[in-house]
Image 1 (tube, rainbow, N blue to C red):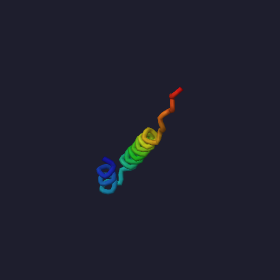
Image 2 (cartoon, rainbow, N blue to C red):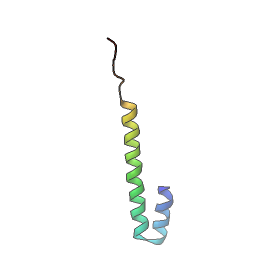
Image 3 (cartoon, helix red, strand yellow):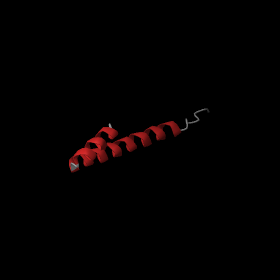
Image 4 (tube, helix red, strand yellow):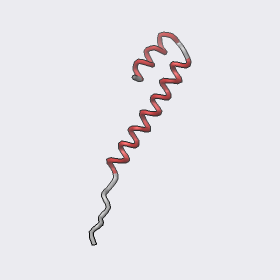
Amino acid sequence: MIDLTWKLFSQTGNIETYLIMKELENEQSLYESQQQDETNETPMDTRL
């Protein structure tokens, strides 16, 4: 999706398209960092 918005921006020069692309990049990086945090969690030792 980001490639599509970049291609559209590079062809049109529309600043709104660029801003949408940046928004998508930010959302993607947030999602990836959340996924990484979930995989790095260690289970709690609940043995008594």
